[in-house]
Length: 159
Image 1 (cartoon, rainbow, N blue to C red):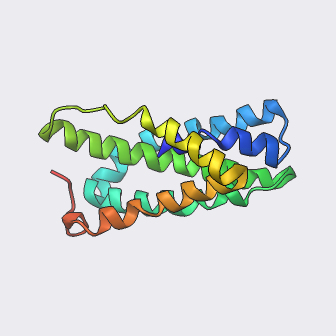
Image 2: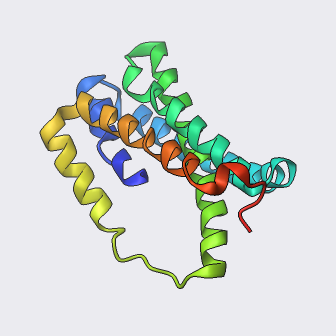
Image 3: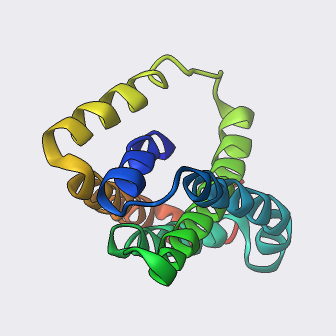
């Protein structure tokens, strides 16, 4: 999912006329969210269970992505910052929980990772600067149903 964030600097510069220095700050908010997600994951998993934490954070991540394409210039760039921070946090929680589980049951496989940025670039070329963030939103909303329709929703922990 993170690879679909690749067109966002173009969206910020060309569509929202955001100054270059501020673009860097806004993009960095995703990494700030990553730190928040990493700090919260153990507490969240202990409190509600890893499976339930996965359910909650995938839904949260999908909802906050809606703030990205809704951003406008000026103070409304805060919508972008909030959406990017929340998305970063949710992706890290999802990554920690699922990779921990995956590493205990399967060998690692990263062969498809390079195709994410390529796909994001093609999507940005086809859909434009405003359309590609909406595609990110649509894809983010595919994750919760995929997780919720599995037996995970009846589990407390993934293990």
